[in-house]
Image 1 (cartoon, rainbow, N blue to C red):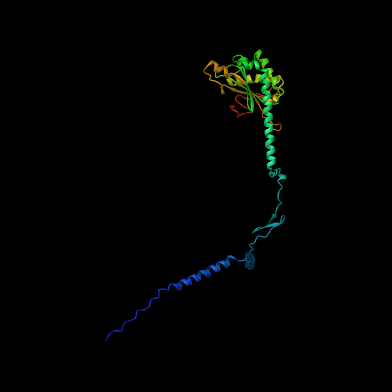
Image 2: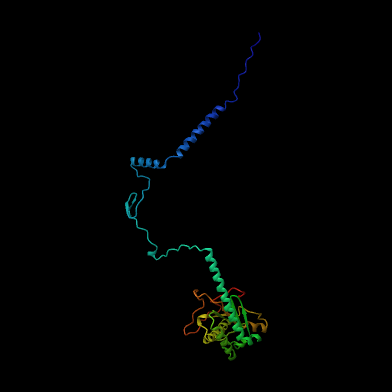
Length: 307
């Protein structure tokens, strides 16, 4: 008798869809709950939290505003002292920082235009002074004893010391006295600040009056300044600078170079603004100009090729 053939059981290959649908449903419910918590009314939550805190004997967590002059509650120690009113900065002597003022383009253009006009006037006065000096010292300029160099910011008058001083001396010779007074008469009407620089060669010097070239160069410049003041130049306009042998003009290896390095240079600066602080030192006691220490520079000029 033949055996009855057994039917194969049907395998459901889509059984995974049921747990997957359950998982998606649970995730949806989870995100709905999270969204509901995140959109909780903050005001109602604070009221509820305070009510629960008071019911269980605690202190409310919401900070209550305190007016100026009222007591500040402190946990465990009672009430503190009253809050002091804010202290004004003016009562402490502290100036209040001024508010930055806005400047229009027209105002900026006007300021720049005024600055250009002022610089043009200063250069015009400096040019007029240069012409006066060239006219007054034409003979010495032609002989090469004095040179005048003009710049937009300053004017240089260089005098060789062999026409001014003897070897190792800071006393002006007789012919040089008239030359320096002539220069002083030309400079007196002009308000420009003047630096008188003394320079020497590198030959060492040691004497009771001048232990080094620093003292010699400063003393020679001071001698010129003294005659300037006697000739009508205001003492507040002049300053003495002694460079010694530290700024040579030529090589000190030859006699000609050392002769060029022994010089006195007048640096006549452009006229300063009236409201600016004058950097020129005041005159010393007794009416004479203040002597700047050797190597000092009370009014430095670092433009136009000056060292």
